[in-house]
Image (cartoon, rainbow, N blue to C red; front, top):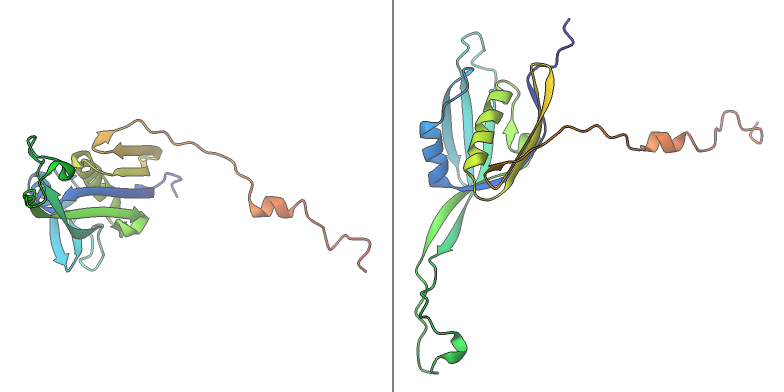
Length: 193
């Protein structure tokens, strides 16, 4: 039995947001990892499910493959107000304010921890690399994770579309079981018989 860690994604946290149209354009042109043959995008009400299709024929069709989940919502986007626009206080009382032109834009928000964003373990690392590429396109939000690749732990941190340096650090913290060792030992207590 090998001691090597299988390709896995640990401690995934995401809150990236992109226009839904940009997400569709991204998946039309993305270079998929070799283990992923295709991507299927399905929308269910306000949920967007992006499923991976395995290129490995030996993977059972009943095995659930990695899937990205996003919440879809609408947001009103306003154009910049004109420079010659007078502040409200400087207007005449009978002068009407012209509305700022705007449009409703649908956004996809990949937010949550672990399987709230990326569920199912088959092809998980491949779909994570696709999510990381998508995060590089996002102007808003952050993606962090620790992955196991070829037996090595790697840290990923992408903030507002910018790949930032990240490291894996092991920190020893005192736990409840450590504190319990400092308590009373009831079995060896001379006052209890």
